[in-house]
Image 1 (cartoon, helix red, strand yellow):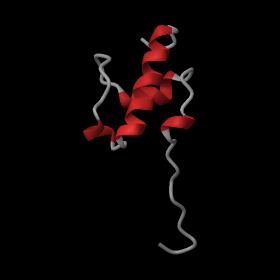
Image 2 (cartoon, one colour):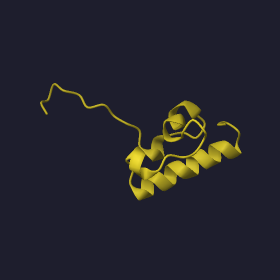
Image 3 (cartoon, one colour):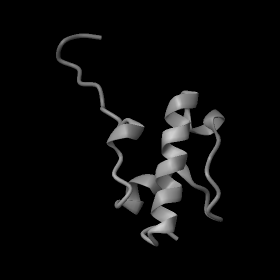
Length: 64
């Protein structure tokens, strides 16, 4: 990779706010199920954090 190329930065699970359903909608299916690690590409630790944030958002009714 040369110095002129820029790499797109993806948010880490720690950086995703649970108040933004648009960002978290990438990690759930159309029916509302949480995508597994196989599809998200997260490590086990990161997947647990994403799952907790999605569940917190559901409890606070910010995400349907």
